[in-house]
Length: 70
Length: 153
Image (cartoon, rainbow over all chains, first blue to last red; front, side, top):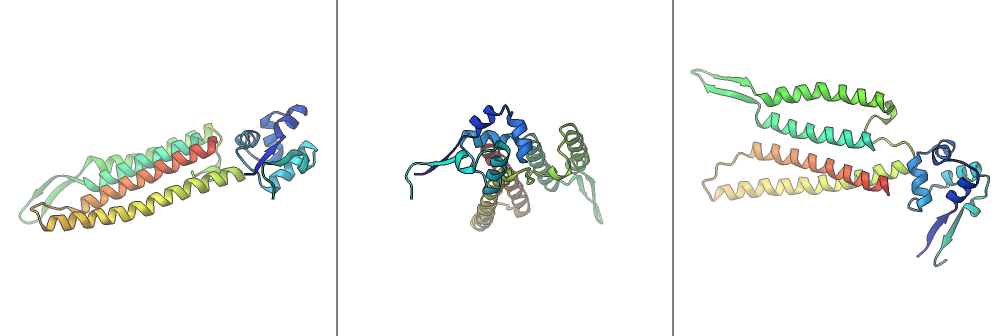
């Protein structure tokens, strides 16, 4: 089974951003950032691109697939 | 989260009061010759009072917590994740309603059928109002439960 993991929490902490601030910058709620960091929510491509922009990191370096590949 | 809980709780109370108001609309019903004398029961008055008070209370809470107009109902969503949460909760409530309506129809039919073979005085109106209001309340509780579970995931 494939699982999408992300480095949002690590990148956000590196940049000294709070969850609230990241939520504001990406146009979502803080609860969405919390779920995203827990790995229980898979974002849309649009939100992933917003995160990539705000965190200054390419999408493929934020998100990765773990488990059986295609 | 608060908004959905308050709205769902408000809706459950509304459905209960609505049911009671239509189950017991009048009091002191007397047969006169000719005609009938009756007064409005306390339940419709309570329902009317609630219909006035709840929107005011909700408006004050909305101001306090800055919910705003676009967040006005329990079906509103602030972002893509909340849209998914609302969709899950709505689907669950829909399933309860559809299944429940079929169950209510079956129960009313069953009661009517049962009444044919017994001396039971069947009041289909009362049963229908009570069951439908209970179903609406149940669907709202399911909506709130699924919404809360998905929201906190």
